[in-house]
Image (cartoon, rainbow, N blue to C red; front, side, top):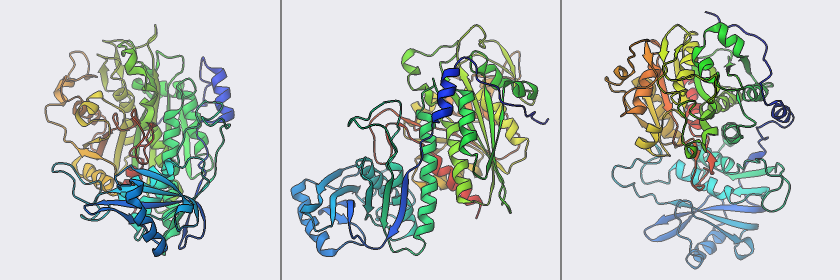
Length: 534
């Protein structure tokens, strides 16, 4: 069945917000400019690494004057610098031998192997400073340099993996959400600051590496900005329009399906979840089709712009971060933008399933029956298990195009947070696809766990009156939700990423990860696509 394409209808109920969004947008301009240099002549800020060793802290940097490094090394003990991860110390450049106003000492941590049972940060060789440690150290440093417009980073960047990590970390670390404050904490009006990031390296392919790092950082910023945007401003209609505007001048095409098109196309999951809201649902298809494409990957993202739980209402405290329930769709938008910017030779389609889950007299209720695209009927037992319903529609649409592989990403279950904590993504699905994603994450330094779906998980979704119900057994809820989604992909190789924990950071900032939206799995999915282009 072809999906009908119709014109976009104006979102209902919030015209004043839509007008404001149209004039300002939600995604700030990426203003970091990354370049390579072999020398350090002068800098507003110079970032130098410090490694923690059994013999005390040791400067770890590249391309710097040896006498100046030795002089700085002699000061570390007096400065109280230990070289621990996330440790950032600022000192006046006049106290060093470097021609910089500020010298920033950023901790690289130790090269000792992690405690037994704890995985390494990435796939870097044992006994060496890992690429992820460098990424985190670079991000921790630039995050502490807000307002600085000229930063030279002299962390070890003697191979492609290290320069990639340092560049990504430094660029991503400059992120700050402009938000809705009329003034910043220092009293200055909000404005984008152009940041020149210079990386000390003599690699011949440095420029190409920095170009890709720029695309990855930009994608991360896109994802973070969308997730951080208030639900008063970002609801399905404005979300769809923002994504369309994002790719307008790129190699990605966008098609938006409004509620009329969804009804004609049989998208009962999206329509059902969205029917309680004054803001109707949207489905956005993003398509990147390069010449000589080496295969076709479909990415599907959950885009619940706010999740009250519906009639099965969440407790008040559990709603406080529910603007982030669209992080999966935001991630897909960011990844598509980067894939096109990098010119990867793989066809990628993105499906962003957008709805607002609200309780009202028109909302779905327990015992209602929804018909998913393709005809599968689902008995709604809990309206707060809505993400799987919109994903089901999108997965069916994605697999109808016969991609080589489909990956969905979603803030899907609280069970994932209970099982994995708030920094780890669970990967479920076909073994080969899981392995590819785990390998990609080992390169990008993102923390994931490969989780099989137990054979008994599917039985919990049996319904007496429909093909399925939308809730399963109480225990193993993360794997159960994956088993439900598996019903809608047919024979297409598939994987499911549950990012409920790591997508939104409610604690303090760390490394390149700020408070609030994180952009988790953006780098891994870009790497996953890139590996298919080889």
